[in-house]
Image (cartoon, rainbow, N blue to C red; front, top):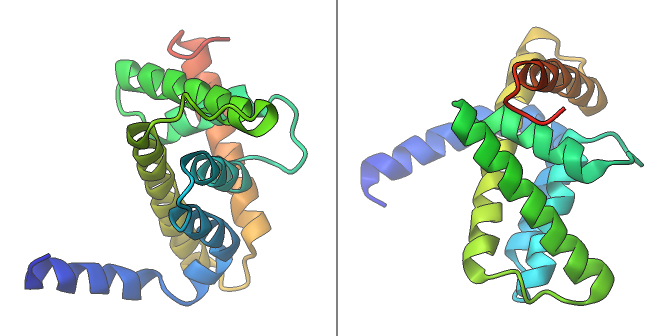
Length: 169
């Protein structure tokens, strides 16, 4: 990193430290634990757990489809990109399930680990920005309130994407 990039990075970190960070701390800690893993399947599982903690209600049935819908709606900018992200998350979730429940992590490559790491990082950055925005509007807001707003917004987006045929119904 050059000096300008370091300054920009430090500025970004300062903008999102303190309360916005504290609101999302559990998800950030889970992500960080994934970064520390030397075992590829374990890191992959941690990133998936981070995404579930951040975008899904607790004890939610049908996690795989719901997570793929929400991540693709959050990150995709075009119909094609939304569909590609959706399929990628479904594949990643299957890999994670095979690893976790069947002890077979052979489908998880180093490349896929890094791709899921990057997806998780971008999701966390977007949600961290949302935490900051919501906190600036209401300094008494909690993570559960923000998460509820995020999930409600994503439900609307996913419904729209399904109605327009971009995501499967």
